[in-house]
Amino acid sequence: MFLATTALTEFWDKDRELLYLGMWCLPREKMAQWTGARGKIMESPWNESGRSDLLTRQCAEDVPERLVDFLGAALNDMLGISRSPKYWRILLRPWALAHVAVVADHWLHLDAAFRHNPGLETMGLDPQDFIVPRNTNDHHYRLLKDSYHLQLYSEIMTAMGRQFPVARLPAGEEKDLMPRPQRGVKGALREVVLGAARGLRSWEFSKAYFGGLGLEGKDGWSLVKNSKGKLWPVGEQLPANLNFAPEPARRARLSNFPAHGEVEKLIARTLPTHFPTLFLEGYHRWREHVLSRWPRAPQRLLVGRGLLHDEYLKMLVAEGVERNGRVAVCQDDGDGLQAPTTGEKHERSVADQYWTWGWTEEASAGARLKPMPDPRRVSSPAPRGAGAQETLLLGTSLPRYPYSAGFDRMPLWHRFYDYLKQRERFVGLLPQWVRDAMSLQINAPDFGWGHKERMKARFPGVRFEGKPWQERLDGFKLVVIDHPLQSPLQALSSNVPTLLFWDPNLWPSRPAAKPALEALRVGGMLHDTVEAAAAQAAWILKDPMKWWRSENVQQSRAEFCKIYAKSDPNWAKLWIKAAQEI
Picture 1 (cartoon, rainbow, N blue to C red):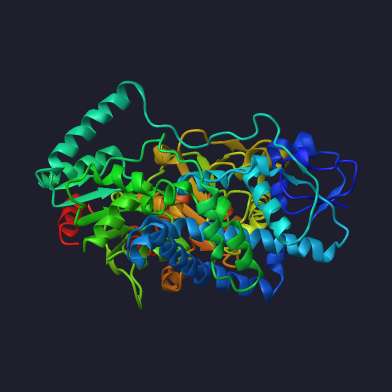
Picture 2 (tube, rainbow, N blue to C red; picture 1 turned 180 degrees about the horizontal axis):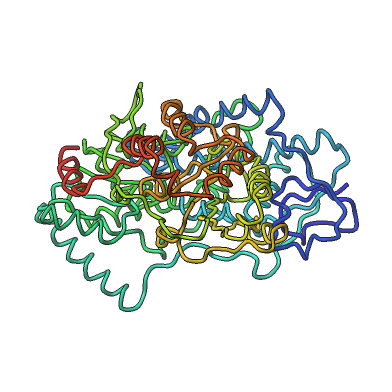
């Protein structure tokens, strides 16, 4: 039997029976290349009790923490500097969380494959095609590529003492996925604005700065305008051409990470080829580039999810914290309802304040929670959708390779195929007259799952919404959402008739959110099974507005939004005051 580790069919032996390491080997977009091949998909080892649970507990927090402490000390020594552990946590831990998780996942799959199939053969990637990520963002984009995962599988198999033939990547396979900076008139205008901003910094006029929040332009401008410039955007990123060649001799020291157990030894083994060059070879120029634009590091910074991947912002925050500056982090739009992600835990561990969109919970350590209004939420007291004829089903997506951004969305990520089947079963249970008026939108990249193609194959009449659904809120008599990320918050705060369903076994909730979710269940808005949701949808659609305007539903919706989708027309003034008091 031949092991297919990725979707790169050039590394398969199609003349033999194939063992696919996971569903990621069979992306819908490459169906023509794998249709007709003989093979089976390996059962996910994450479903094996015992060893996978232990691996998750160790690699979600303990191993990344020890790894960052080791790397921080090593960098202090190799670079001739002395930075605090917190400084290095801000810079390195987002990358470490992802790298540790993906190595642990890949080892778990390979170990299970060879244990259950001792005679397996496969093909690896030629080391001539190995690449070293440039920075955290580049690492993130590489983890969307089959070729980068093939490199990891190849390195892990070699470290496990298994030798197989190798081959070079096909011409054109490796593409630069990093986003490009703005060019042309807009790019030139942006540089003028940034130049003016750098001049203002020398006067130290602004009392606080914000960046990486994902705000719309008008909302960012509201902060600047209402603060009269006292709250100002960071506005800059590292230039795309800030690249550095890896230095193997220096990198060899990284493999001295004091490892305990097989997975940690693999992590140590892969450090020289996966530790981003910006952190070692580029550190001094990175720091110099950022600090040359600031007379002194800002003492108050308000940041968002950019703290996980924006290297300019990360350096600015780290340098500010090193000089006793203070930082507040806004929750990610998709956090709040589900179990805390590794990204949220990291942000709360390095920040002084953590701004939520209304919720709070007991916090034993880390940032102080501060409920604040979300500028993206515009509360609508009057129900919307009266007279509309269309029903919308909103789904989501995840990258094909599980846990390639940390141990988040567990167990959903390794059971994502179950989520897809639940969505299809929901549609199949609906009466034909409901399906005839239904459209589908996936509010995330496809990642090779073929969401549209899968649905069309089973339900040819289902339409697909092209325009962002938020721009058509008055056009839907019912919005059905099958996941607990940002979409439920957007729909409920907009007061559009909303029906929610998801499997709580796939989407574990935050303990503090359980009472609010239970209130939605009592109000008939949230269901745990597709059968209950489909029956409720058919009943609601006979008269959606009568149901949605009922006192019980509107009261449950309003109470939920106060805690998880807080809004306020004076949000900008509240933010400005809070930012200056960080």
